[in-house]
Length: 456
Image 1 (tube, helix red, strand yellow):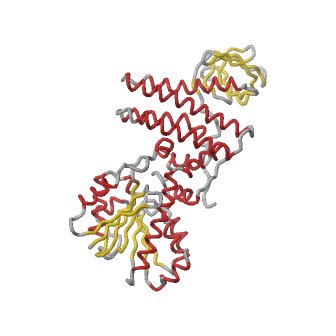
Image 2 (cartoon, one colour):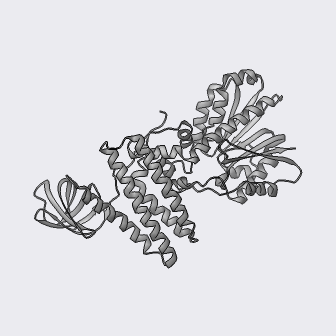
Image 3 (cartoon, rainbow, N blue to C red):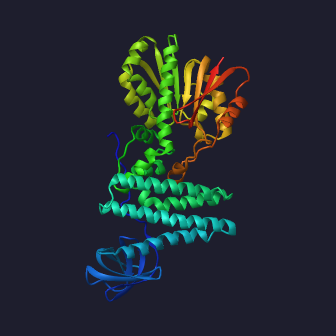
């Protein structure tokens, strides 16, 4: 593959920071933190043996388990011995106690900050549901590890569990008008489910946003290829991500735009046809179009003097796209523009001639722009860059047909929610009346709206 897979934290649960009484054989100490795999503790006395019996009380229950020292040091400032040890044989009930304590500790922290009684009641009910969801995920994970569940069955279990929980979570949060509280609940959800969901490379990268924004070109490539690159419970969450309606409509959106480009190029009798792909990403639809040898031959693309202009603020995305498209430079002329959307709104020149593009399009941008910015963007593209008779194509998810629950809850992808009527209202508000023809199409899922703005 052309990328490096990021290293994901191998711990199955985050640590619980807590100072509890602890005994290592006959030595007394205090816990510093612990999780389901091991413990960190301090003592005023040195540990005599690498293998010892550790005892501590958590959640009102006694944990008594053989442990093995992994590391140790003497802190000179406090003259305390600090050790890290792993459990040698923790019984399932012990792991369950620690897991519940970890979940409850996190939940108590944010429940205590809620002042409104009605809101606290809603979040408490949600929290109980979340506990059951997490415990169910862990059960699936353990069954995969012990070969009690094959990966296909695990994938189905994770999908069923997650679809059900996403719907219930949405029902709860729609009852809360306090948006900062909803955001806080969602942050806690991500931290609590991270040990399972973020074992999926695609989900983890989507949350981390290493390129600085949601849906970077690599994520789009993974979605287009339906890539599954993780194992165990991570495999199940990769599969869940790829099977989610969002990923499906992303693939269908790309297909629809590719076919629209084919049709527009086929019908044009112009010599010198110019296309501008805004927030172009990996340009997959362009690559698929140019790799269609029959289409290229039948439409005489080599003689049409076609120009593909790629615009994106992410220079790495532009570099990737050029590396993939350069083998087609005998068919089309390719230019790149490392501009932001605000540059277009300001009227920055990206070509020697104004109003010269026959087709301008963007298929993954509009959902991330607030009304005023989107309206000004549409206006600027129409007024300053689109040729007479040219077409501006804008793709947008229809909130009346799809709620991006998983993308938001797991990956913190926030979209501006609009229906067709909202998009239509923006276009008619920001474009001069009588100077364009407006029509709409949808991709095969029906979720993606394509606004087709034809300049008269």
